[in-house]
Structure formats: C-alpha cells, structure tokens
Length: 291
Figure 1 (cartoon, helix red, strand yellow):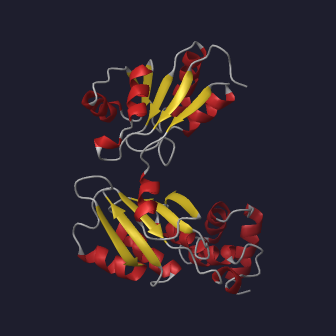
Figure 2 (cartoon, helix red, strand yellow; figure 1 turned 180 degrees about the vertical axis):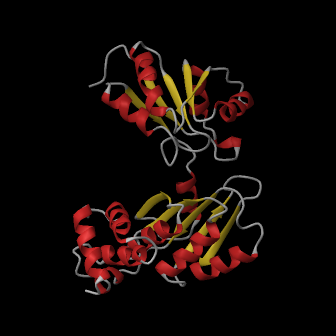
C-alpha cells in the first residue's frame, strides 16, 4: 500500500554512450527530484553538468547499498523524492539499485520507472536473432570452470541468450560458448553501443571466437553477447535421467574435471535451477563412480 505524503523513487535510465539518448522526461526528473542516488557521483556529475542539472547527489553502489537504503527510505517517507541512476543504462539491470527498489516497495514508497537506454535491449534489437523470447543472463562467472558449467547448463535453452562480458574475458567466453553450444551456433557481439567506435560482429560462435583472437579492436570497450537459442529438438534429444533435462549431469561433468567433488556439487546446486545440495552431491558421487 502506497504511503500518503511520501516522496517517490524514480528509476531513471541514463545514456550508455550517446548523451542524446537521455530522454526529456529523464532530464526533467533529474532536475525536479530533491536528491539523486548515483552509482558513481563523479561519473553522474559529468552527465548532470552536460545538461545543466544541479540536483545534489549521494553515492549508492554495490558496497554501500544495503547500509544506505534505510536512510533514503526515511527521507522519502518524509516527502523527499529521489532519482536512482547507475553509471550507464537502466539501474538494477546488472547494476546497483535492486536493494533500494525492493526496500522502497516494501516500505510503501511509490517506485516509478523513467525508461531509456539499456545495453541488453539495444544489442538484442540489432542482433538479427529471434527476439520473441529471450533470456538475459547478465555477467557470466569470471572463473573458467564456473563459466563453462553455466554455459553447459544453458546448452539446450531454446530462447535467445543475452550476456554482458568484460573485454578481457570476451575471447575466452566466445571459445567456451562455442564448446558448450556448438561452433555453428549463430551469435552477435555488440561493442561500444551508441559510442564513437560502435561495432557489431555477426556470425557463428566459432567464427567469432577466431575473429576476436585476431582483431586487436574486438576485445575493447563495453560488450554485449547475443547467442541464438538451441534448436527446438535439442531439449528432447539431450534429455537425461536426472530429472532436470540432463542439465545436472552436464554441469557436474564439467565441474568434476576442474574442482573437488564437494565443491562441484555445491556449485551445480547453485547453477541448475531446482536442484538441492544433497541431490547434486548424490549425483556427483554416482558420476564419479561411473554410473
């Protein structure tokens, strides 16, 4: 229930590169609010200066969000409206903001979306891959074994997959994707979206991995990877006997080759939806014994 007399929390999307992508409504909201909660006040300060906005700011990032949220909720209860922004794109989408939004909603604060740029949607819209159904995975695990296990779990996913990736890992990720999904699976890499050096690479995963390794400009800047979904028959033909479409066995097989059994079971339970720790451990024992 919305609390009467309280301020609002505005979730404001900001440009991912081109400043022209800040909407008129977004600018007006930043100007009208009493406070802006920003991921990096220095970064957002540059944006505000470009548009002549002088609203005061407070930092809200991954390391202080849980502690700062109650203070901001209290201010909104007192009638103050706050704008939430991240460094680029839509807050809470692989960026800080989720904890504050959840806390505000639970406290009866009205949460208002001021939509705009989002790198995942921008990349999907130009990927030339199916867009009727898609799955946003955000950033894959940084560690190679966990990343490969997660990709193995997604191998039979029929929806188009969207990932964020850092430039220094994109070559390894493309190679791991080619190994998990097949080198012929169609994919698109969108680099530096809306910026001066924006580039879109399309092709099979194997081809993209080879190109990334040989092109000095490929692994530079902000990167979104879009991968076509598995063929409709893949889920049926690959279904295993573990009750999870074969995903648990595939993930455990990758992890058991990299880490100890107990650790592999724990990671598998986190990576495969609906699997409990004891179930993953029991199956890991069976696979280790060759059953």
